[in-house]
Image (tube, rainbow, N blue to C red; front, side, top):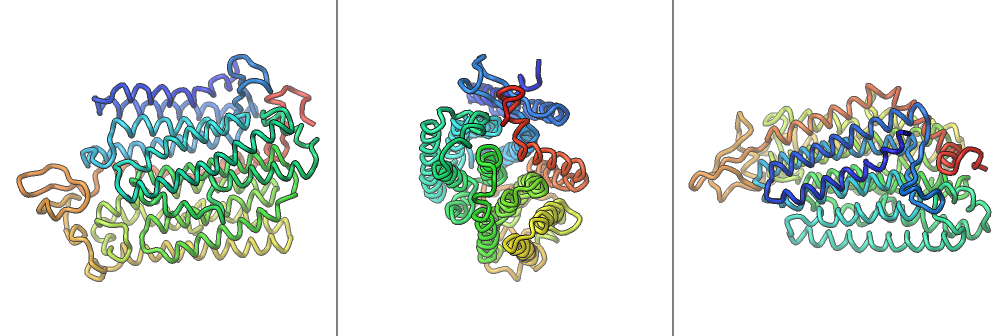
Length: 536
């Protein structure tokens, strides 16, 4: 039995866990145990799949015994297996963080009966998208994760969350309709939606028809990946959700769109017909995103703009279309998922300790909580690309690919990437100087909770003056655990994972380059699905 036979379990296990978690609606402790155990088991399975395809190459499994191109095919190659492992590892860390927040807050901000099943369904949708071997199954994966994300974004039912959820729903529906329309037109033109089969048949179509289908898919995936100018919805949608939800959205959802773009550009439409367009989009995404971040005072909105900005680095690597460029892009995707998610989790802790995420109202956090300062500082300089961290290594690989290409536009993109990195450092330094370095008294209208000096991470005040969620009420006073260990530990683990990317940069770059070579070659993917000798 091939290892690929276990690939569907990466989707099935979270679905079964969601069903069981829903049945345990009145047993919160059991619900938490089920959710965390299912994700841990799924992660172990995906690590096995990654180790297998690293040695043997791409593998495919045909569900129900229907042979391609007629049935549903799931394909595991180095790129998809790496994305599975990273996405589930991040999802597990965020789930533990969310569980800790729920326990500390009494689950006031997110009904436990809704959160856990929905979260597992989100993970199942992400996994299905990474494994999909045909365009319609990819569409199904997108719809599963988007439906779950609608629910998670509006948890709590506050007015800002509902308003942001409506924007998110409208944009996502437009993207999905465009994607589904493109699938219908591709099927009408080529008679199949199997991606390996399309890799052969799309090349036989009229170039004008190819370009039209190509651009339709690119726009649909560009909306989901939040590339400029299709990224207008993201900074207004993500920051309103609860901290764990924002973290997992920032880490994963846009990267599913990036994954679809990479798969489309390398497998279905190889060549350099729109590489110039992609380079322009990459440069504008980097610069517009980081300039938007400079104008923000709210840390969550600032991070949302940096999220958009750094998507441009991944599109840059894709546009170069070389092994070095795509390999660096794959490495940068892994780096960015980890670091961006950890920064959003740290921001949740900042908001909890300081009473707000507004930089103008924060100060003195380095003295009040040195651990929190360290947890922010490490991923912040990593995101900014300071040597020797993985952010620097990934950007260096992308710049090397641009220099090797040697075109004027490539050099402009290299310069734009350097400028974006410097501006990212400026943005991260602004947060450090305002929230951590200056005294609380220098802040504009600091929250009273920021001025409370404690030794155990908790504060006791009048219940009417406590900002945020409370626990442990005693008469007219409340005991608030500002930095519960159940939230700090997963954040520490995720920051450590980001540091480990630097330590393991050699093997990870080797895997990324191998994945890039297979992506550009296309033969391993096509032959894994259709059999040996089927690749053109």
